[in-house]
Image (cartoon, rainbow, N blue to C red; front, side, top):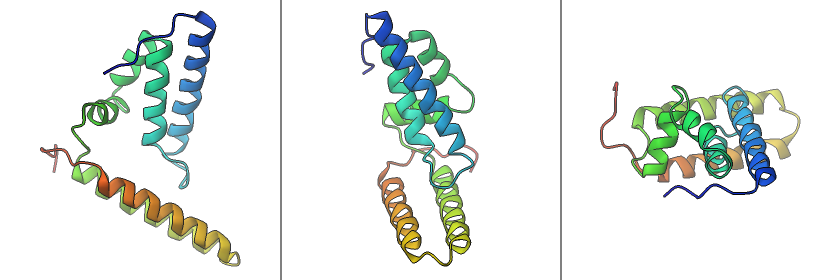
Length: 134
């Protein structure tokens, strides 16, 4: 169920700005290990749904972001291949980061906590019934 758009133009503009910031951070998350990607894309979709039908439609039909958002919102789940690839990239970047900050054990704990938290979250997501391309 899609949230109803807000009627106030100033509030709608704030939702669009928040959605755009969230989307931008999500794109950065594709390259930065500790910045989540999909949750930020989902937040952007929620903000756009409230702020602008045009932006929401653009996002859920975007070739890069759209399928992930639509599958998640419909409850279909994520493809096993995408989940596994995400976990491999997550742990590889966390291990690289841990080596980079080798003299700061408290950061190791933080990195491990983030890795475990994201892994648990991903493992609890439903898997798509049909894995496309695998």
